[in-house]
Image (cartoon, rainbow, N blue to C red):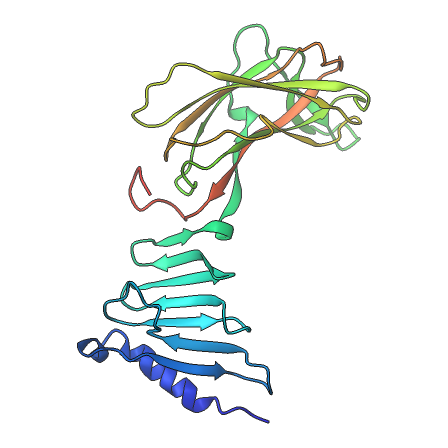
Length: 282
């Protein structure tokens, strides 16, 4: 049996148009349009305007959408604050408009790589990795190149945290690498010395983390976190600088004597916005 949608939809449209215009001069009624788009004994959505739990609305209006079970809010259009809220499991995961621009929350945040190719880095001293060919087309092509690291070889890199980063959240530096020979029964040592400095902060002491990880067959692409648990971002802000020394750790447990190609140094970071509303703050 067909449901009678049109009267409800017409009333919905009238109320939405009313939110920001004439209706502001009079108290807005609480309107529950009930089940919209129902199938027999299987309601699909519910719309509620100016519902009784409206604790922060003083004028304007609020349009709410609920999930199939009629209990969990999925979408909220806030006329007074001029913003749209998206919900998952009843918890807000995204907000658009108002003073928030586009803001992500909870399970709504996403991850990205802050990429730092080693070709942008600097070398110095006697422990310099060799930039060499590691693959070609099998017929003497120019091929592709990468830095080959022996024990104690090192390179210096600098990273600036982007404005979309969820400030104070943990970041996860890591390296992409591969052994030049068979390291499937060996261990490989990697090290990272870093300093993380926010604008206006005075800091002169570095932190060193090392890892010895099991190798694999030659040219197998590996990814290793430095450190595995990440680096806490507590107290760090936008445009903070992460200066690092990336090196091959010559520890006793590093019993692989061949070279390794380090393809790239990256930082996994959490994003909660397209950027920042101010130059140096969210």
